[in-house]
Length: 287
Image (tube, rainbow, N blue to C red; front, side):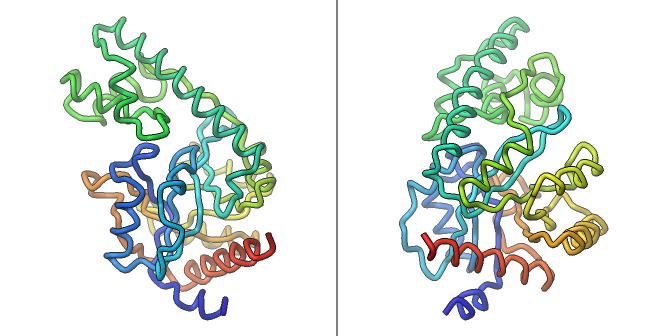
């Protein structure tokens, strides 16, 4: 039965965001769109929260869903995003981490709003919360959108480039957990830890260190990766016995780069994704 199950998987997207974090569509709408375009397997990977899974039906067959979350972490002072697949979201250690991020992001937003006010751009925390989704998990694109709404900036990119991007005048760092600790927490929650968009790492050399921390896979295909990077990540994953995944990192239809679509995967990546799905199915049956 599992063999037939994985053989049915051909059209995949394992990196999608909803309104629960910083996406533009709600979880139910995302599921409907995935069904309409004929996806076989998806993962909703909102930032530091799995609350989207509380809003979707349990049975969405024939669509398959690999539970996921994109977890923030840090290595040597730089951001590293880890995709957590197949976790037990009721695990208390995992829940403690997501609650820490929720409260920490709100405190960070308050500090950034104060800095913006001092720069002559007053906005209200309530405005930001209003667009932050059901979880009220505030990320910088929410603040950027309010700056655009007030016409302090023409675009969200401008808001980042001038005010709230890394090391800009109104930037405040968010609370972070180390990569090693995030990987450990994901494993404690019976999940699989995958480096998101490794091509965006501040230094590619970090990857060797992260592999030593027990990472399980690499997001080999991502719209920000050049073909030579994809080939390189396939080689690294193969040499180290790591899962290979892929996803479009969809947030909004206004972003013409990160599309809500079936992603182009080579057979080697698709085979690895099928193995990951099979592993998740086996772990679920053992519960």
